[in-house]
Image 1 (cartoon, rainbow, N blue to C red):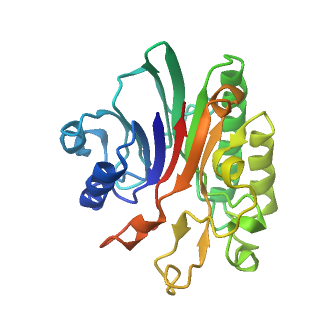
Image 2 (cartoon, rainbow, N blue to C red; image 1 turned 180 degrees about the vertical axis):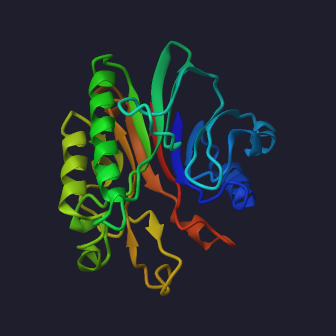
Length: 260
C-alpha cells in the first residue's frame, strides 16, 4: 500500500500537476493539504475518474485538507478535538481497509505560527498540544496509524540546508521542535528518517523567493509519522522532489511511503 502526503498549495491551481503526478506515482492513498477551497468547490470528479474516493474538509481561501483513496473511508473525523471554537480546516482522519488489514490515516495541516511574537504562534503551540492529546488516545487502539501532512516544523538542523536562516522562524523555534519531539516520543516513527537515517539533503519545501529551488535552499517540514504497528509494516519511503520542476509547481513536493 502506497500512502502519500502533499501540500498542493491550492488544489484548483495545481490540478494538472496533481493529476500528472497521480498517473505516474499511482498511490493508493493521498493526503492533501492547503486546498484553499470549500468542500463543494473541490474538483472531486477529476480524481474520481482515476478511481479515487474523495474525503474533504475545506475552507474558503485558506487551509483545507483531503484524503484521496482507492478504498472507501470509514470512521471519518473532521477537525481536531480540544477547542470547539476552532473552525480552521486542518485535520481529517479516516480508517481504510484492504482485505483483513486496516489503517487509520490523518491528513494534517499544522499551523505555520509566524510571526512568532503574535497569537498565531500561541495558536500553533496549542494546536500541537491538542494533536498530541488526540494521538495519545489513538495509540491506545494499537492499530496501524499514519499521521501524514505538512507539520510546519523543521525537526532538526539536518532538515534545513541553512538552519541558521531559520533560527527566529516559528517553524524552527525551540518550542515548536520540542512539541514535535514530544509527539514523536509517544512512540511514533518518522518514516523518512527510519529509511534514510541521517542522510542530508532530504527536503520537501523550497520557497518561491530568492531562487531557493535553484540553490537547493530547502527544508523538510512534510512528515509521515507511524504508530508501532504501522512502522512494523514500513517497506520504503521517498521524496518525489522532481515534482518541483513542474510548470507552476507547489512549493512542496509529495512524500511517499509503502507499507506491506
